[in-house]
Length: 289
Image (cartoon, rainbow, N blue to C red; front, side, top):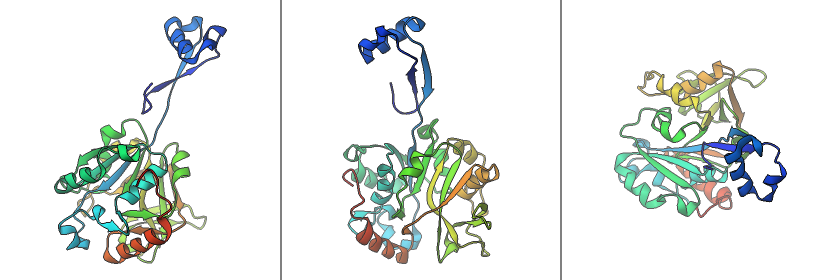
């Protein structure tokens, strides 16, 4: 049987002939069908991961004139190791890394196939950034029929998403954090019962102090949703439009995360990320990262 996105047999009550051995019994059941046991096929679902690591990162010039932002050091590791650890620690085994063409070789030299980390990496080249939701279009074949966890390559978390991923069934789930500079992010507005009622991408007028962080869980409908989006005024396919699709259907969960979070896209936030990594994250890495 293949573990990723296939049919896995559930064997109805076994007759004595099948108890001689699992493999021999399974083979007999396939051959003689209902005489020995009835096979019910149930599809197992596995979360797949995407790291978005493209873009020009102009806010970090001149440092990013010669390398990708996600390859810059954050304390004692390349930045991309942090989102990788977020996914791998949560049990995700297949990860798509979306990179800019001029930096693709650097990522391959650093990360390879994923074997050293106990996972499998796939790479896609993003010739031109078209917005975060473009990751789902680029990853259509990779996502296949599975749910997907998308993380931005410059997002660093103290929070552990393992239980969120393990318990995810369908729809969408996103993660909010109260911040002093919400204008940098997509934001979510809550009602008096802390239920999400509105999501906007970098609103010009204040809407909320709760930013939506760069980690998203969606079922595979996100691919078709992204394909049908129209570019925003910024000319991008906005991740907030995907979120609003699920929100309007009542299928979006918004969780407020604990612990520190940094979107290391500016020099100030990059400095905070260094300190976070040094002081709180050194004992949280897995699989040779």
